Length: 324
Image (cartoon, rainbow, N blue to C red):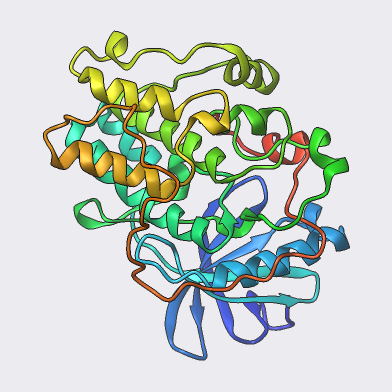
């Protein structure tokens, strides 16, 4: 950090801590150049000693900065001040979806569907730009007035064009309560993995509980891989059977059995909501179905030269005290 206390590169004045996670600490800050408050995410020192990681971080930050969508938190800047590496984002005032779930779940069906559809819109836009979020969870969904929302923490988004095969069995991608079975096996995440995670979030909104639990991350990973998905109807009898079928499909163990991208899931949920919940899970749109119109120009991301972020189990789980 620069000599002037709590100011990064003589521009971003850190005001107070705003949040924290296993990889970073987020601060409310003042952009002295533009006179506006922003959020500054600073990487933890344990990560910044790895030059390969830092190169991934820079590339992913550049890719994410190209995402301009109403349901995605905007990235304004990425920088370095000495050994401090940071991302500057728009500041969102409000709680995350996890707090809403804890306070009010199970949510009314239409409200849960509306929230899930908006999540699909943001994640689906990233998918069309060639990025995978890989850590979709309610803590990364920031709620605004009237259930508007923005998805954040695309700093670990994966570029689909490259990966490091020799790392796949050594790492765990995402958060253990929300990651897909293939992520639990250490495989490279695809858009179908994000679809699974959105399904877990929808399950939690509708029931007030998670589909899988475990005493530790290994037990939880095996539950995602092997245990059958609980029926929504058995937990919340007010859930219509057709909606239960959609969620069961989204939480399929095999990626190819799910909807291919978040846009497809969003259309299925929208059709179900708008047509009196008459759609069934077997009416998945074909691969050639037309995509929804973009609300912003589609960015052209540059694939990272070495693959994507990968975090060992200790880095991912040890610092985080929130099991969900």
